[in-house]
Length: 546
Image (cartoon, rainbow, N blue to C red; front, side, top):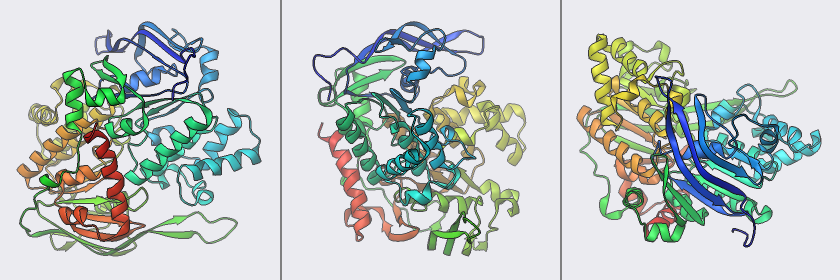
């Protein structure tokens, strides 16, 4: 709640930020933006991918991406100029203490060769000035408060040993470490299932209540804004097109663009259940598949074993879309990685077209590698930062089909167009794209191989509501045209409702429920499934009744 009668905590006056283009000029991505944030106020920033949301959020900490520059205007946190031409010691001193940020991509913000607990301790010791013992105790408290299971053991793991949602919660714990006055969250619940999302949002609410911190929440999830924020800024093409209380903006939007965003929010509508196709010939079969992550042993002890997947049996027909849902750490992504050959099962069998599938991708034929493709949860880490978008898309076309450069270029431009991106993006690098644009490039690259099975791991997690709906429509169109089967892994139940006629529910590595999506969502038999649905429909009702 904003504190009445106080000076603004943040003052943004006619701020403009530009990115360098191929010719060396600066193209504005944030244009003439003005707003204030009061102490204790919660402000949401929404808009489609590329609207400038994340750029504006980073500017609140004085950050600029490589190749960008402040073009004009001013941005103050209290009396400190965060938009100075050069980063001042005063700005550096504020970062992580008075002003903290939770970035969109948790994997990129964690050090891969350091246990996650030690990384949170490092923040507490260097920024909060705590001693070793006090920092260790505080670190475990933060991990526990963010809902992470077995924090003492989990603190010893490395980032790659955690699920996407677990990594995100570790980053949130580090941001909360010094009790900041301003907390900037850039898509903080992107990788979280609905039950964990509720826990994290409750944690953020507790922080605000205890410390009076102001909150800036950048998100494409309008339900999260409705639950957490008092005020919302709507951005389009780098400008603020609407600014006002959440209740007013959501119930009586003044601009056509705001109405479009609200209308694009995906809801679970019982009148529009996904239609199942008649069962076709079996494409993929899993029987009693199991996989375990070995935990590091200490002081000569044998490594502990945690069963990530246990006795998984499921079939997927040709052209079928199967949804996989469950909370963070339930084994969803591990299942996808096993099918893609990135991990090797310890037990059970995987068959493709009735024949055993080699466990590791290196042992599969070129045709099998082409026919089974995966779109990963984090597009930036799966794209080569030194390759342009065009190079990334042309490579599978030349490798698998032997197309020449001209034909491959034409095919890639057509693929991007079907995902709502123009040919000008072919010459850009991944870092020059928004999170949603990066994800669409990853989707285009997978479809370039013309797969028979596409494994989609949280493919819409980085997309705003309007682009999410568009991408899912494009995916269904491409899938129906190619007759490719899809395994859609997500924590967003509305995505499953839109695209997947059949669903399996994972918890602690076990399938606790499976069947037609309409039946599972309409009459869940397991209490865990009912809890997931309750959280998802609560968030949906906030937008639907606004």
